[in-house]
Amino acid sequence: MLKTILVALDGSDIAERVIQSLNEFVLSQDTKVILCHVFPTPEAEMELPADRPHSESPTFSFFHIEKQLQSYQESLPIKSELELVTGDPADEIIRLANIYKADLIVIGSRGLTGMKRIVQGSVSSQVVEEAACSVLVVKPN
Image (cartoon, rainbow, N blue to C red):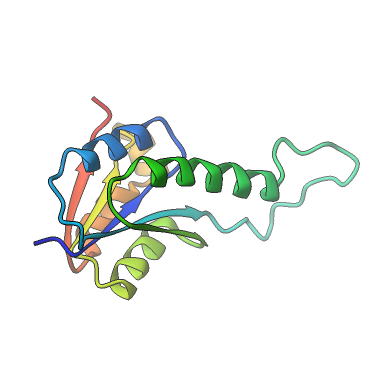
């Protein structure tokens, strides 16, 4: 029986499919779901000019993601919690899974291939490789 499921959501279109996949499970009322989002650590070297508008403030992004996770949370038939953290996405997902003693991690795959996958890396691949529990990777199609 799955007691704790960590669901990693990145705010992309694949997040909807991840939630749909989660809703297809037959889960006990005792199952706890943790919906998490990891904000990547801002680059220390990246300096933005103070006299130019920035495309998106960190505060706006936080509230937007929090609202999105809350709407997913309301659609779930079982109890759930939200975790919004900052850091390396794969490392933080694994850390949260360990803290909550997750039985399963559900994560989306962006479907990167070739050079994009090499350059940008694959969070889902790293999580599959390093997590102590099972990992369900939801693909885009």
